[in-house]
Length: 354
Ligand code: PMV
Image 1 (cartoon, helix red, strand yellow):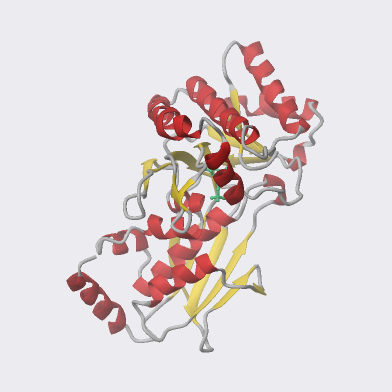
Image 2: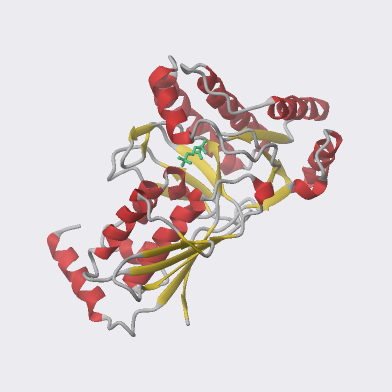
């Protein structure tokens, strides 16, 4: 942002009296990557080693509300419990705080994720935090557009809080572009209504905390798996082009193969790291084999699995095959109530409250 427009913005934002500024509430949802983010080019800024492609899912909602703090410090409550302000959250607070000198924020964040879904809440949390801060400080219900007018891309700020969180800023089909801190931003390819038949079924196969965090795992893979340069610089960029082509044609069968290959390669790369990292377990592998058998029986791909840094499967299919896939999972021994069926969701939405 040029000095002139920053001064103009600071003057505008400080022209609202305390009573004129609205308490804001931001809602957001998690996302699941079809093409994965796995490796940071810059650890502090969370810039990725390769691009990624996701869909935002209505599997749960994070709600973050922001108002003025009544005490002279920033406060952060997570699910009703006063919580530590991590370095990454503090960076976001400091970024917006510089536009409103001498202001402290009271931040309350809650999420209603079904534990069954197996989604990490950090992505939705980062998007809701940035949306709420940007809405409160900007005194706007459309923070992406408002801050964008001043050259400030909110996905860049969400990315600094949680890498994959930047993709939850938008709904539908979302691409995260690799690059440096300035240009590694996120674009929506299609909105949440574009392919409404696409669904993702998730099942918890294990709920213990993972032994190797995604941050540690991805950096170890980058440093020690011998083919990561080929994967990040050549295989993934080509795969993103192909996946976008499939999405443009709503070609589930071809997209399914891309999703499964991508997941398999991520976990093969983890296993080829040193020391090796294993996120999948026997149950995950049983599901992988069962989905391949199902697709073979149908003579085409009607379902695809994808695994993040854990053993929980995310199974992509289309609405017309939902029952077939659920029957398969029930036959494998999973009970229907533990499955979560998610549709494509919108991106952040900000409202004024009270
Ligand atoms: O954003 P993080 O640090 O939780 O890493 C996410 C990594 C994966 O979930 C495995 C892949 C992705 O693109 O979401």
